Image: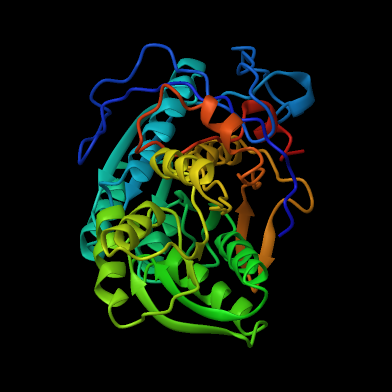
Length: 391
């Protein structure tokens, strides 16, 4: 998928109490904070808070919104939890749910975290079915293990959306980043910068996770196009900087010559730390966008010829999924071309942002001064951008 938007990211410090295994967010803010969108950062438009009556939903261009007979019950089933990205993802969907409560679209949101336990996530979704949720948004641990319980929910009349990571069910809508193209672009950048020659290692995510399967498959397809690039080994960083550091450190002694590192978000600061701790010169490596990595990148850029490239992977895709789900429940229909259909598996891919490179790194970091090192630059579709997806 070609990059279709160029974004200007405005970051606001957002503080929320993370909810784990509770039916309501513990301390939701009275007023949702501003959130940068995928194309710009306007203040969210205030829709007319009126029911437009019979005759179906109004057109989105009218600036008015249909109202449900009663507000929707929403379930959010998340798999792994504990890194900054997943925490932001949870905050984002809760934030938008609070806005939709004020609008009259959402009654409640039930947030559950299963960790990497598939059975626990299945039980959470079944509980949401019993609760009578109208919409279940799920960040699944597996691209196929959740299919049966998701289809149980669909059979019960519940709209089910898989976010962040896709599933293979033809009854579920995926709302996600195109991870195949996302990681393929990083792989092409690395291979091109190496001139198509060299020995590299790969730092991948959690083995078997659907997002990781997509990413690694795409990377391997890219590497097949560069016969001069030799993949020495693949290690699992599990999207965790400390795990990635240990995994990379464990293989450095076996490979005295490493020309490049192909990684994912959540890995690259730990990768740098592993090389530095071993007293090894840093090879060329793909980048990420976590602030802590960007700070290190700036330091290395200013003191050496270090160069990399990072692509945003916004946690706010969960909020985009909620915005899409509520509109579908209200009867809105997608415009032609919005949904990608691959053998019956339907997906909406959230647009890419402009990559971070050596040329815009300093300016980018200026927008992140108030954020912690664990922060991932974020955006989700604004209400206007969501509206534009529908007839």
